[in-house]
Structures are given as structure tokens and as C-alpha cells.
Length: 440
Picture 1 (cartoon, rainbow, N blue to C red):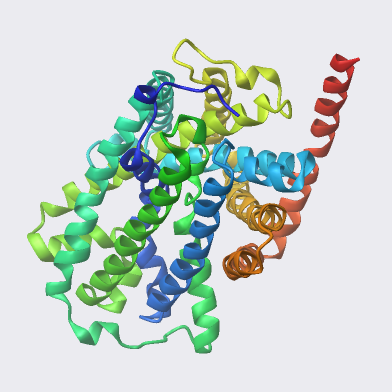
Picture 2 (cartoon, helix red, strand yellow):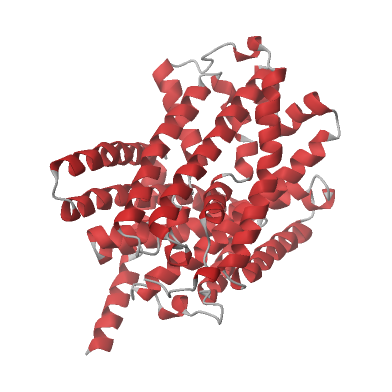
């Protein structure tokens, strides 16, 4: 458990919801429709499949927040409660690596979006790296000012990023041409194979659904707020994703959408004129900035919860006068800065991409563990048959969806992801040994 904060220093429903939405909807959503265009309009079924799977995961995290409102650390905290220290450590280790890699990728997306307004950023590595480092450390500083301050930034940027997305997602429905939805399946494979392929892409857009549960000690009335924020965040994100995809597919021809590197901007130009691409680019930059802010908050809270349980070095639990785990944020931001810089070093680009691929895998493994812990906690806390059946109806689909998502990462990624997780075992042994030595 974390330090108990007075209510005025805690975040409420809308800020918690913005943490979920803001961390789920990053800059990548602006490119997703183009990546799915080669499959045809069947990709809309992929979005629906991912949304349904994410619904079960949202219910798992929402119900866990009610069963254990005192637990901080989200997937780590719930896994440790249900499955013990070692399983909790593996989840935390993987999540910590994943967050660092993801934040580096988000920073690169931010710099790329800003290059529309500052072309020098697209061709000068020094300026690009400097801009990325400025963003990382500016938001790190903001987050050390307190959870309320970073929460306000998150809420503000989430509203700003949703504005252009909703304008195109909803307004674009009036510009749709039905012939653009043909062919339904252009993948050259069966309908089920096409759905599997598109769902593999789209499920990653829902990563971050667990974020309201991670800073539980800083949330006002976590038993109610986290569950509501998680479901509300999922609903908002799913609407943006699905309506946006429908509008873009209807506005742009399949060939245009497939070859577009800025599909939302291209659709906006057709709807509102040539200057529209600038405010869409601004929306992409704000989306990346807001997502980076939210994940930097998470990158401090997760190691803090682990360190408080003596499964990470005590330095990660150090707080400033505002009760912010600033040392964890600083250490993580150093790692993020290194990963981000790797992308602009030619010899290390492939290594960075490999780390990013592992980040995707190490996000879904905590989901898998959390669903297992949810079922076990229910078995221990609820003796009524009806309650256990209802829990199983949520946990089983969530577990199956998470396992399927991990398999979708590919054999090579799963193989190396397993090695990365196992590489944390010596670290765990050292931590346990240190704790035992201190007790003697």
C-alpha cells in the first residue's frame, strides 16, 4: 500500500478516466486505419473483436479494484495478492521494461508530429533528440509536482486530442461513400484469418486499459472510481477507434487509405480544405504529448508500489515533499531517454525496434496473470456458487483473449520475451537475499 493522501491531493473520476483514455489513445491511432486498409472493411470486425476482448479485461480490472481497493500497482499488485511475490515480480519486471520502451516510442511519435510545423526535426538528428529529451524531462518535472498537477495536464491534453478525432469520426459519417467499403475482404485469406490478423493489430490500441488501477493510492474512493473510470475510458476509446475507422474508410478510397501516411489529415483535407492537415497534425502531437505524460506518471507509480513491497530497490520508493515517487520517475526517464536516443543512432535502430516489439508482449503478460489472480481471489473471498460462476464468465474470456494476444505477437517475440522475463530472476534472487539479510 502507498502513502495515504488527503482527498484534495487525490484524483477523481474524470482525471482517472483521462488517464485510461490518454494512455490508450496515443499517436499510433492516427496511422492505424492505413495499416488496416489492405484487409478491407473486414478490419471493422477486428476492431469489434478487440473491443469485446478489452471489455472483459476492463471488467477484470474494475472488479479487482472493488475486491482489493487497497492494492496499488495495478496488474503487479493484483498478481502479487493472488499469486505471490515471484509472480508479482515477473509482472512488474516485464511491465517496467515495457513502459520504458513504450515511452521512447511515444516520444519519437511526438517529434515526428512536430516535424510538420518544424521541418528541421525530420532531417536533423541533433534537433530531433534534443526535442525528444526536452519533452521527456519537461513532463517528468510536471509529474514530480504532484499527481493532481499531472492529472490536470492529462485531462486537458485528453480533451484536446479527442477533439479532432471526434470531429472526423462523427463529422466524417456525412461524407461517406458506400462504394469505398468494397471489397469486404481483400486480404486474400479466409474471413476468420483476416479477422485474426486485423484483431492482432487493433488489440494493441487498447493497451493502457489497466492504468486507472496502478496509482490506486492516489485515487479518491478507488473501489468505485477505478471501476467506473476503466469502463468509461474503454467506451470512449472504442467509440473513437471504431467510428474513426468507419469514417476514414468511407471518405477515402481503399487505394488512398492504403497508401496514406496521414489518413486523418487526408480525410480532414477532403472535409474542410487544405489547412485542416495542420490542426490534425497538432492533434497527433497533443495525443503523443498526453500519452507520454500519462505513462510517465505510471512509470513512477508502478516501481513505487513494488519497492514498497521490498521487491525492487528502496530507491524507487523515495518520495518528495508532495508524496511523489520522484526517484523512480527520474531513473525511468533516464532509461527512456537512452532508448529514445537509440532510434536516432543508425547502428542501434534495429535493437530499438526489437525492444519495442518486446514491449507489446510484456504488456499482455500482466493481463494474463491478472485474470488468473482475479479468479483465485474470487475463489478465496467468495464462497457462493453464483458469485464464482459470474467471476468465471468474466475471467475465462479475458484469459483466453490475453493468451491469444500473446500468441499473436509471433514466435520470435514470445521466445525472446520469455528470455527477457527470465533474465529478471537473478535480480529477484538478489532482492530476496538482501531482504533476508536485513531481517537477520
